[in-house]
Figure 1: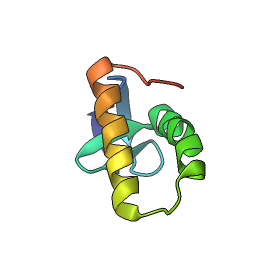
Figure 2: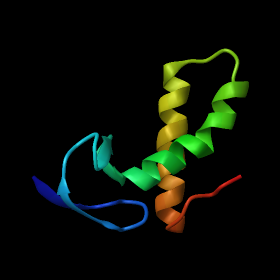
Figure 3: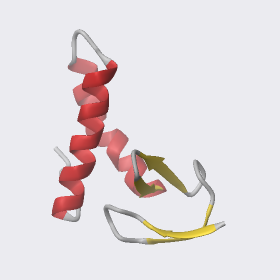
Length: 77
């Protein structure tokens, strides 16, 4: 078990278990609350994207995480 810190909200994640207490995405750790917020932010964008590609999806996720890390919060639209 690890003690981690969320890369977006800086919350401590104690006794962390991957995919239960936090999610690891490309060298970034997100707490459960930030993971849910990420999904809430990108869901409307995903529904309108045609045609869908995984390269575009990966870039969208990483850009959204990097923007949230720079601001220290999520940009809820």
